[in-house]
Image 1 (spheres, one colour):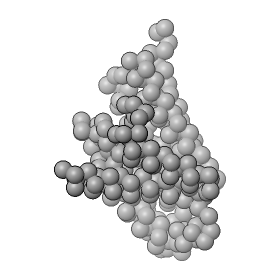
Image 2: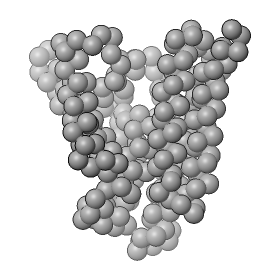
Image 3: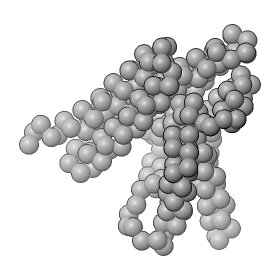
Length: 228
């Protein structure tokens, strides 16, 4: 059906709409921003899946996907961080430091679009993972939440994760060519840890899941380098 060929771009547009709605919600209901990021991630996954399944990949679809990601995973987390910094005890001008999240997200997406070596792994933290980490900090349990929402801590997180998006660090891509254990040990280990964390912390597990993703990728890369 001719209508189906437009499905991937329609799903990408849904991602973009979620990002816009999330930005609007930040100013009145900051917690809801996280929900819109979750929804945007869902549509971001579906549009790629639909494009591969229907064999409807196109240059326009690729560009639209990056533009949608820029809003949902670049601008939305930056606005969320801006609001949190504004509410903290830092100097008001320091709140504008949140803008570097958008800047480095744009650099990350630009690098991804021209790099053909990121099919089986990622170089730097993907923008969806960064957005999930930042917007889900609000769900952290106490007393960790109070420590994180100190102005200095928020600025450190902003700078560290912005740099990690463009750092030459190889991170695993959760794409399975088969579902056997051998060859997928790292991915299954990450998934098991993620399920365990979600069972105990629910939404508050998301920042820890992203951190475990980074740590597991780094350990896997180090072990792989030693074997060589």
